[in-house]
Length: 128
Length: 374
Image (tube, rainbow over all chains, first blue to last red; front, side, top):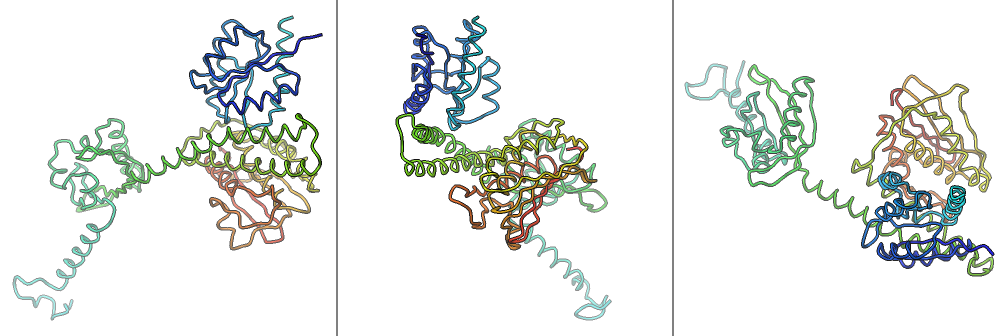
């Protein structure tokens, strides 16, 4: 039996985490959550992850800093930045550090999950 | 010439003639007006010596006219910031060069050290054989602060509302997608209606944010040479499902030749989206047509419909804020009253113009023109 793909979702809004967990689990993903940057760093070390969804504004650190940390060791891991609103400045900054994409909270999350699935498939190809 | 009191030249030595009295009266009246007007008024020569410096001017700057005239560097005193001083001098230079009224925003520091934002209007007037600078100063400090507060408030409210809104939105989506379990048709209808209103709330928030950014000059325009025909086709195409649902026909009146415009692509898409969305919203039967053509004024784009139209008395207010004219629409169709205003502001940013032609019951056509070198 193939293992379920695991996604780490980092957001300080617990209710939002509940919703995205339901949506991802309905798409057959295993979901790991973190409500701050410190937890996220811990879970990045202790789980075998296939993708990360990262809120840009975290209470203890900036999501971009976590993205930078991930990119130091893993260039291909799909990392999507979560944001409450679409801002060209934020998009530009995240693109600079090779984010795979964005999840605008008010957008249709099923569409976003389809994008995540495509990104995971693409990352698999690089893994060989 | 005859005076009121007798023939000209009849006055006793030392007494003022009627004409002199009239002139004196007129000067007094004019002085009273200048003194009482609620704008700072200053008239100075090219050496910076003031001839007129009214009370409001003294209140704004904190200096009396004598102090201003005897100050070793008055310009530096009220414009301690080098950049502001440079702009003030540049403004005077522009007035001399172009010989017309020059209006600009300026930041001064009063004698008491209070930083004030002024709207300055300067013109050149001849006075006793030389050119003088007449400046009118309006203190807009409070107005600016209020606007900043308003912008910050809208920004904060919009951003803070988005997260809870996204949670409610996704909660409804999850139930509608039957992830936790089956729902019955009545439950689905109720949730679909709730979802439509969340969409409306999202549009209101987005529009409020857009308009506050535009009004605060925080929108950066990225012009590029673009295929305007393709953009219009693409935007119209994105509305196809919505138009099919309403039984409306999508029409295009586009020339064979390529039309290139130098414009901000995202802004153009936003304008077209607003106009087509409005057209569909207020049209129950018939069609929505987009067209583009090159005219001697530039590139003319339009969106027309066979909808309910707008009453003549409402046409002048069509591009105002929160204008909806109680047009009858479905529950999920109600607009924000900001779409046309945003479109107008975006067209204005391109140096273009926008207008509307409409008759009640006969449809509406909104036309915007981008200048050839937009």
